[in-house]
Length: 127
Image (tube, rainbow, N blue to C red; front, side, top):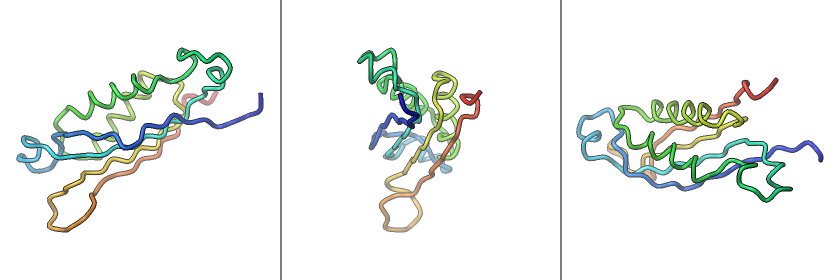
């Protein structure tokens, strides 16, 4: 088979989470949208048609949901925790592109949201 880059996508994951610098945000919560693009070698699954040869996106979602349920102050901390958890539980992940947006940020502006983006290349998968 030819060399390829392959990705698992989870787009538009909606969460109500308790993330914010202000104590009230960590109590009441806010709405968030998360997009993930995970570099993962799934060529085997293309031939086998078997979920054990790929990254199960339901398992990925469960990891993300668990992290999003933890009250924290910063979106950056959440993004970092998601990346750490995913790389720890799924060591074949080659890269992660993550976008996390707070839909109603308390900053006195009319906007579609404020957030963070992160791009990680997992050098531990390169031997």
